[in-house]
Length: 60
Image (cartoon, rainbow, N blue to C red; front, side, top):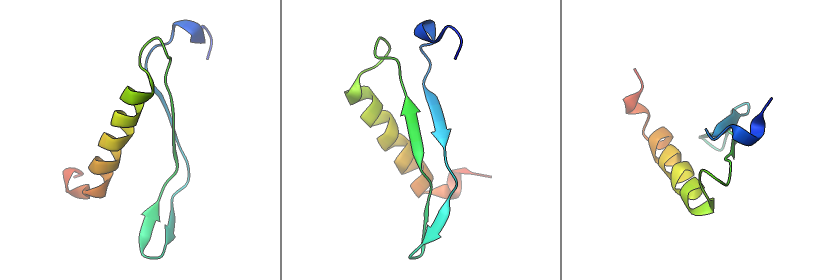
């Protein structure tokens, strides 16, 4: 990103989903500027996202 050193919002990159063993898997990468959050906060964010997509009733 241009001027990336001042970009403090998280950047999410989502890959192609696959169905395997009755589960839907989708890779997720998160880039977070360390000035905005550290590993603890990032882990909590990923955990919250994991819980959200585990119960798809919120969509639609």
